[in-house]
Amino acid sequence: MRRSVIIGVAAALLATAAPADIVHLKNGSKIEGKVVREGDTVLIIRGKSKFRVPADQVERIEAAPDPHELYAEKLKELDPDDADAWLALAEWCRRKRLRREERECLERVVKLDPRNDAAHKGLGHVRHGDKWMTREEKLVAEGYKLVDGRWLTAGEYAKFEAVRRRQEELKKRLAEFTGPILKLISEKPGEASRARAEIMKRKKEFLPYLGYYAQRAKKGALRLECLRLIDDIGYTDAMYSKVVAWEAYKDSYTKAGNYARGMIKRRKDDAALLMLVSVAAAGRSPGRRRAAGAIRAIGDRRAIGSLIECLLAQAAGQRSNPLSLNSILSMTPPRGGSAPVIGGAIILPAADSLEFITGLELGNDVGAWVRWYQGAGGAGG
Image (cartoon, rainbow, N blue to C red; front, side, top):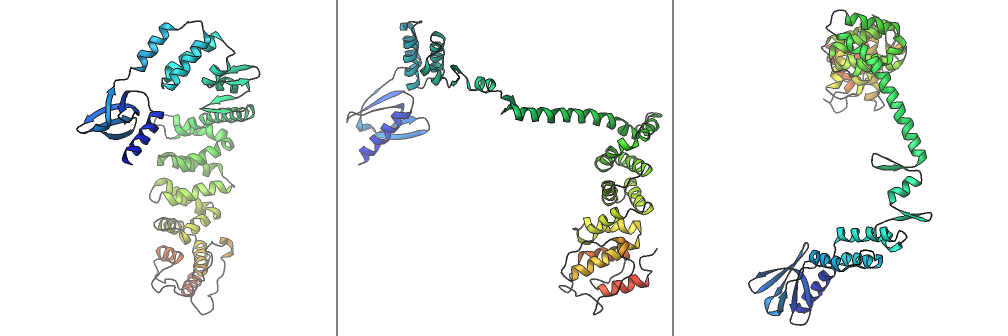
């Protein structure tokens, strides 16, 4: 049984591995592979596979001829103009796994007989009409374009080119607006003032780029200058309210952050203030604390009223989106005088922000917050 298993494995390896030494077994079988003697066994290595045969089952070991040397000998005997002979040699190379030599033979066949189907197929060529060509040549003939390693149809390539042209145009346009904006913090005499004047001449065109740099620039000084220009130009689009709110929230202790908070208060930018209320009412700490700090610095009491409304919704298990600031004009304590205290000592996000803003410790008690709010002047001030 053991002998039959060994012979079966050997036969399977013989069918797939490149020729090497030939091990002749006493039962008449032959095994090819790299042979290593290990005491009373013979180790046969075939690629990544290894197996052992008892030495007493081996008749003899024959060193196989090198296939490259055999190939060189066959070349000497070959008629250089005989396409069929080259094709036969290519097949021999395939069986011996001489890939490079096989391709050389097939290319020689195609050169001698351009319409030889077998050689073209062996080279991986495909038909296009009545011609053989490489797959790449066929794709080109069919109108495909190779872009970044991908073959695109004519339609796909047209879309790609349109996108590429738009990107190039945007790069040029961005460079046109980026230059003056970056010069706003230049230390060269007069350069910053000239850049500011240039921006103000085309303020509507520059405004989106100022919004981008006010939010994305790494240098606080540049964000500050962009905010100042946005303030001078003026805006009604909520996207700029978002930029200002982000700066007021992100830069708690910088000049740019202070300026953004001042803008919200001075311009009565309710959209920006509501964005801060949203974070203060439901965001995660420490982001919630930063938003509450910005609200405290702005000092608009309507934001506190909106947070109380959010607290009521949270205590009732509802959503905590802030109401419109203009609706916070008068408030009535909920029935029962206070909201439920969930989990005893667990303070809700809106209550946490209210305590941080006001310095009071009223927890989740919505009734107490409403009474304080009404007694402290409501939404006025």
